[in-house]
Length: 149
Image 1 (spheres, rainbow, N blue to C red):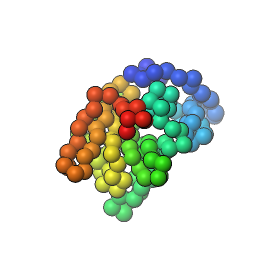
Image 2 (cartoon, rainbow, N blue to C red):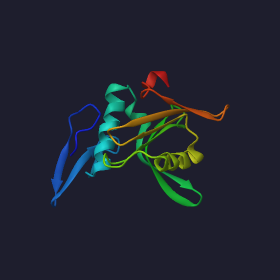
Image 3 (cartoon, helix red, strand yellow):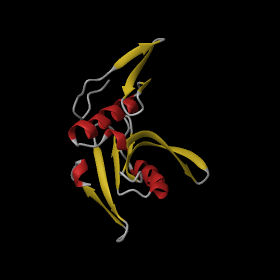
């Protein structure tokens, strides 16, 4: 797999029936290793180990109902009150981060109404903070540590 613009970690990989799987520490199971999953697992470990995000408040593949269809957020950070606070959308490193990617995460946010949106392809990471009072968003220079949210 391609090196990413994220810190490395102790990756747990296994093979079964000729397929490669990577351990998802949040779902506590091995999942198929795809380029997008490679990015997800690195980014989750970055949030946990380098930004101080509590493992118990992060979840992968969070299902939501959007206009009668079931969608899945790649990762969601919840507050202690279990209200969603942040949505993270991952793309494979070969996928450029475009307006269409932001449109996708914005549609998810119509349901969850979080404070932060993050998009990453493992090479480029974008984080914005939403101010619902002024109906504006601000791109942040870096992913905020958990204690600054």
